[in-house]
Every structure is written in C-alpha cells, then in structure tokens.
Image (cartoon, rainbow, N blue to C red):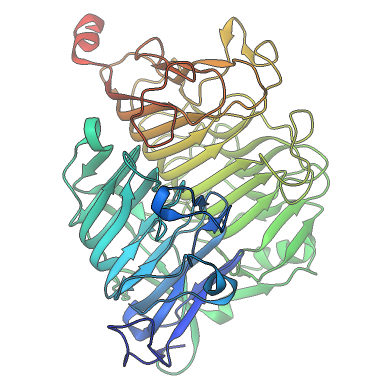
Amino acid sequence: MPGVYGSDAGQNDPATATGIVNAEIGYYTAVYGLGRSPEDVLINGALHVEPKQENPYGNPQDDSLESNSLTKFWRSMSNLTINPIQRPVGDDALLPYPEGIAPPNTLRWAVSQAAPLRRVNILGNLELSGHYGAYAFGTYIANSQVQGSVISGDGTMQKAQAHWYTRNSTIGQWDGRAVNYLFSGVIGAPASNFAANGITNLQATPASREAPFLYVDERKRFNVFVPHAKSYASGHDWEVSPQAGKQLPIQTFYIAKPSDSAATINAQLRQGKNLIVTPGVYQLSEAIKISRPGTVVLGLGYPSLTPTTGKSAIEVGNITGVMLSGLIIDAGPKQSNVLVKVGQPGSYAGEQHDPTTLSDVYVRIGGPQLGSAKTSVEVNNSNVILDHNWLWRGDHGTGTAWGENKADHGLIVNGNDVNALGLFVEHYQKNQVIWNGERGRTLFYQSEMPYDPPSQAAWMNGSKQGFASYVVAPGVKSHEATGLAIYTLFVMGQDIFASSAIEAPVSPRVKLQAMTSSVIAGFGGIRHVVNEVGPTASAAAPNGAIYRMTSVIRLDAFPSTAQKKKHK
C-alpha cells in the first residue's frame, strides 16, 4: 500500500543501520507497489537478489570463490521506490564471504531470466552482478529510473552479467560490458561500442506498451491501469491519466483462483469480464479463450497455467488490444500443438494504436513437470508486441531429456508488424524462432541452443548441421533485429555444430545488427553467424573475448555494404 516502510537513519552505513526493510527476493515472488506512482511507495532498505555460492569456502582474493546467478529466475519488482540500504540476511550472513554485502546506497539485483524490474525508482545505485562477481544471464529493466549507476561488471575481465536489455528508462550512468547490452530509449545510456564492449544504444524504442498494473486510489479502491501504446519513446513515464491509458475498476475483473476450471473462467470472459489470475497452479482441460477486444488478463504472483488434454493454454481471437501479463504457461504431459495462440492462422487482425501485448509471459516445457508442446507461442495477428518473454525448454528439473520434454519451436510469428522487445528463447529442438511475417522487429534476443542433442546425426536440418536459432523466412522482404546473442553449450561429450546462429534472406530491407554467436563451454559450436557469413565459434578455438567463456564471435551488421551492393 502507499506509504513509507523502514527507516533511513542509517543509510550511509548499511552494516549498522536499524529499522530497515531488508530481505532477499526468492522464487515466484513478485513485489508490487500499489500506488499510482512508484514514488507513492518508499522502502528504506533493500529487496535484493544475491548469487549462489557453489563453494562457500573459496576465496575471492584468488578467484576460487565460484558464485553465479544462473538459476535466479521467476521473481520481480514493480511500481515502487527503494532508498538502498542493504546488508546480508539469513544463511548468507553466516558465510565467510557473504554475498549480501553492498556499498552504501546500492541495491543488488543479481538475476538471470524472467526477473524484470518495471516502474522502479532507485535512489542510488543498482548492481546486477555479485559482490565478488557472479556469472549471470540477465534480463530486463523497463520504464524505471536509477538515479545513480547501474553496475553490471566487466565481462571481459571478471564474472559478470553476460547480457541485458534496458528500455524506456532513465539512469545516471552504466558501468560494465560483456556479450550483448542493448539500450533503447534510455536516457543516460552509454554510447554504442559493439565491437569492443558489446553495447548498442538506440535513442528511442519504435513501438512499446507498458504492462498493466494494480493500484489503490485515494478512496482506497483497487483499479488496474492499462497504459496506451507509444511510438519512438524514451525515458521513464509514470503518468496515470486518461491521456496515458485507461483505468479499469476492480469490479470489471473476475478474480480467478486455482480451483477454478477453464469452463468457469471462460464463462466470466464471455460475460465481458477482465481477469486477475491469483497465485497457484491451474489445471486446464480446455484453453482460456479471449474473444473481446481490449481484454486484460493480469497474473499476480506467478500463476502457472497447465493444459491437461493436449490443447492450448490460452487462445486469443482475431482481435486487438488484448493484454496478457505476469503468467507462466507450463506444458502438460499430453503434447500440445501450440501453448499460446494469438489469432487464428491467416488472421492478421490487430491495430497499431491498440496492440495486443504479452508482457512477462513465460513458457516452460519440462522443469517443474514432464511436458511437451510442438510450439510454445504462435502469433498470427498483426501489430502485436511481445514485451519481455522467456520461452524455455527445460535443461534441468523434472522431465528434461532429449526424448522427454519434446518441443520444436519457441516462437512462430506469422502476423505482420510484430515487435519483440526482450525475447529470450532457449533449448528447443529445432529452430528457436521462425519469423514469417513482414515488417517484424526484434530488439534484444537471447538464445541458447539445446544442450542435449545425443549426436550430430540426431540434430540435422536436412543436409545442414543443426538448426539456426533465429530464422527470418526466405520470402520475407522487410525485417529488423538488433542485439542478438546466441550461445551453445553442448554437453554430450562429442562435437556438435549448428551451421549458423541466424538464417535470413539477403534483402535491402532485412537489416540485422549487433549479433554474436558464442560457445559458453562444452563441445562443438556454431559454423557461422548469419547464413554463411561470419567465422566459426568453436570449443576447439577459444578466443578469450569474454571471461571464462570459450569463444565469442561478433558481427556488426547483415547484410554488409558489399552484400547489399551485390544483391542490387
């Protein structure tokens, strides 16, 4: 609720501060401020995420302490202000080298995928790596302000954040470099220097729409604010007004609980209700079907939707303006063809001024349970915004083996004018992404190819070795993608290769920039970056570009100027 929490009396000496709010944020924890503005909820203290120490008795002085945040998933903060006063808590405080130590006025958020910060106001510094350095495959900041520095670590010399996407925000400065840092519409972002530092800075975000959020008004009534879409936006914007979006009273929502059936939820949707999905696991015998334009489906506390009969979990009709936010979709034991379907094939419905938007929607194939689905997300409508999505075929957990959690593709886009902002797609058994629609755009893409093909023969695309991660279909005439980082970590004890990280037609209006293909460790690698362009990233040829990562190959642009001239 709006108010001030904790004391700022000891803010210059976190070790001795008293009366602060100080806790680590764990799995499936989402912290929401309930004010109209992030400034309505002030926390003196720290809600933080720390790396895990694999060998707590190592020594950071000789780099023998191994810390990482590679499994710090599924947690978030939004719509609040933090005056950072942080120190170790719980078991961490008892370690020889506690991770929770932080300098004055510094908050740590050392996370990997599916752990975003939205509408957050930090009255100090934000550290994205560990106190002693930490491996991390991080995530996303949107519509936020960091009044001090954002510190990600120097990935060329130490354990650090490998990649990060920040959009439509304001920061004091950024301190760090590694494989792929993309900024779009970020005031205070560093200048582009992709070749040396992996940094790309776009002055504005061409198309964006912020996630809906719950708040309490001055009369103690709950509402959901749904922001309007923006074109070429930059900086943070916390305005809540009719010009900025629409206010939906809580009475317009059906509040779902895990005991509800899909039939119950669909009956409420047919009556014109929006939907708040409360925490828990929802077993769905049929898809949740959204047929009214402008419907809002808002998940709170990471609810999981699981289809049990081989159907989809969510189907959006041939409509526009639908908002899906804060949801986990888990594949069920009976294989689904598509888990999330946005429009029917051939639809192309959708309007630029009111785009259907999927914010913080995550898909898992295996991990918490055995599951299978051919395609995780299929977008057939046009003018859709994919706003921070992690589509994951599990590489650890329950039911994670080559012959168990079967999944071909993470994302297939058939609609036109679709924008993906912060797209994470990992470990699928064929192409991670296939883009068939025209005028698509991706800003930031992170992908790991599957770890577990049993052999090269088992992972062939016809005569090609393996499957490219990001595919722009041969007939596409116009497409843009910026900031793509694609990795391998083949672990089956033999050399396995992908012919290329990316496939795309050579066309003047197909423009790709700031791309990397990398070998984290293991065996084999990636022959080329795009098609047959770019050198091989190979486990057999380490290049030391990134600390303890075997090989990182960069490609500034495709097609190159020479290729464009040849094509003409």
